Image (cartoon, rainbow, N blue to C red):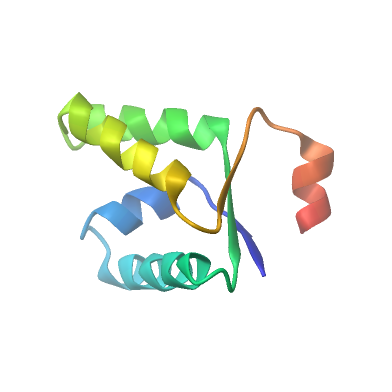
Length: 92
């Protein structure tokens, strides 16, 4: 199974703001780590994630950089530069 995740998914994964969403995303990332599923992240999601972490959660920029780097190195996570509607919609 492939998941196209949005900023809300990432924020839910790294915070405790919504425990149900956090558990759901933890489960998805665990399955991706076991290469049972794939997670697709598009570039604008990274941009929005950084903005929310800085402006809403006042996170240190070095911590945010580590979170993004870890995300992109996570097994089962694939980064898609730009937004390509045909490719994204083809996954649905």
